[in-house]
Amino acid sequence: MFLGRRLPLHIIMLYPCFIYNASIAVGKMRLPRWAEPFAVGLCVVLTDIPYDIVSVNFLHWTWHDTDPNIYDRHYWVPWNSYYFHACFAAGFIFWFHFTRRLICKTEKWEADKLPKELLCTVIASLLGAPSGILLFLPNYHPLHDIFKVHSEVTFFIIFTVFLLIVWTADRQPKHTKSTSTEHKTYWSTWLLILHLFIHYGSFLGIVSFMKPENEIAIGLKEPIGPCNEYAPVQTAFGMVLKKRKYLCVTDYDEKYFDFHCLPNGKPPSHGASWYTACGVPLPNYVEYVAIIATICLLGFGVYGNLHFRSGGDAVFDSATSTTQTKSKKIKQKRN
Image 1: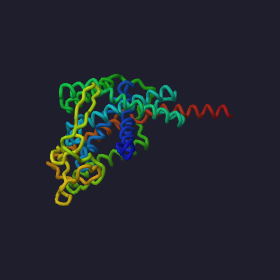
Image 2: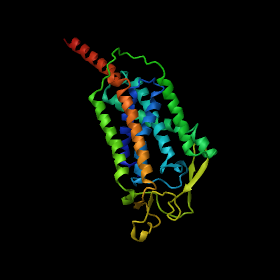
Image 3: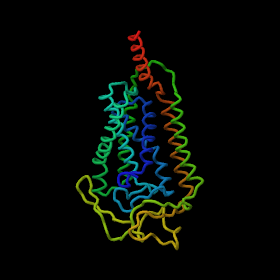
Image 4: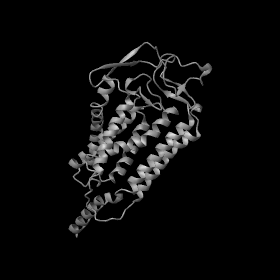
């Protein structure tokens, strides 16, 4: 855990996998620069949905019970989790390619020297988060914070905007440097497909063959304390909302866990932040299997079309040919 136990190590490893896989797949669509980040954001959400739904219901983590920004849920996943993934991934990709055009001076998919690539990555990481936050301002904060619109609505608004941008860009003719009509698939694409197969297959397998009521989660969670103490939540528009400062074990609305596996079913005492939570049965097993299976089918369909029915790996040939040309020129000069 990092940053005051707020950043788990697995998140540092996980998000790059989501973003990289989505970025490479979307790159084969040959979208204009202004549309590509939004397509990556949508694909990251598509990758994230089964991970989020299965993980929270199997107690891989728990959410704060009364935080207004994550109060509205979809199978116990905050709608803002999907909103976050779409916007922050889009922000990162925008700044990553923008800084590479300024600093690396290479073809889009052509690698430059390691220090330059690291600099671009660091800048994109620093600017991607503020850019993602900016995308919350015109939609989520006024509608949710002021007019009390459900977060499901604000998510589908941003989803619609992203989708329209991508669809509009995809309707435009593609002008490419390559004259070859052959669809190329490199070995690296099969590694990405393998990752997707393991990713979607794992979560479909978990929800199909494992039981959350058998889960016993011991670890860092929302602190337990008095039910009448509240903490302020400052919004981007200057409003002050509130949430309970502690988890109230006698009045909480997180029905994916309880404390029945503890001795006599007694909850942890006040002040505890490292404690045991017990999984509970899915309210409708078939429904959960159906929703995860459908998302997995959609994921394979979307990524399959992006990898095998779009521009193919020929989109990366310009970088390869540029590198080879430079190498030949260097050899000629040496001779």
